[in-house]
Amino acid sequence: MKLTSLCVYCGSSTGNEPSMMAEADRFGHMMAKEGVGLVYGGGGVGLMGAVARAVLAGGGQVTGVIPRFLTEIEVQFDEVSELIVTDSMHARKQLMFERAQAFVALPGGIGTVEETIEMLTWAQLGRHSQPIIIANLNGFWDPMIELLDHIIKAGFARSNIRSIYSVVDKVEDILPRIEASL
Ligand code: AMP
Image (cartoon, rainbow, N blue to C red):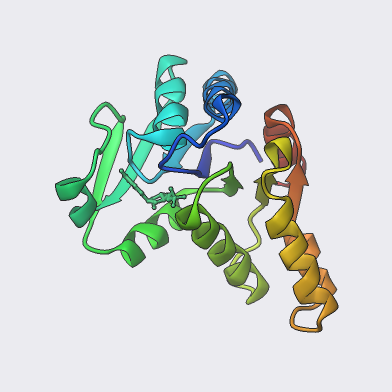
């Protein structure tokens, strides 16, 4: 199956390492080049903004899904191809889930962690089997991967949850990894 819509979870901040913004930008251009549309949280700030701008700059399609309260207090990104405003965070996350064939976690904060873990949880419960890719740029996600291993070791999750997600080290590996499992 051809990948046409990808949900990217990532920081609404830029982080301290300039390379993270640069990698988000590079990944957005790769998506556009491969004809992969972006589904994301609709923000214009941080890595979120970098990915969205790059997809658009490359001629790609961007769908932003944002809860109304964030449009009132935060910087949304008006240039998206399609902006969907939801009544709640829950509705937003559900819609992002429904609109995407696969999920990627670029570096980010607790919002990114929550969204990524939620997709792992839903997969663990058999609600979906779409690919989930952890983009471990510069080892950023090492502590989260270690936490997942720790949970398995302590007997609070089965080791087969490792098959729910894939870890890649470079943005170049994200799309091929997804294409291989669709
Ligand atoms: P974090 O990783 O904590 O920076 O949070 C990233 C997530 O927070 C995004 O995927 C959104 O769910 C949400 N978020 C934070 N700021 C914004 C914003 N300005 N516009 C849209 N979503 C945002």
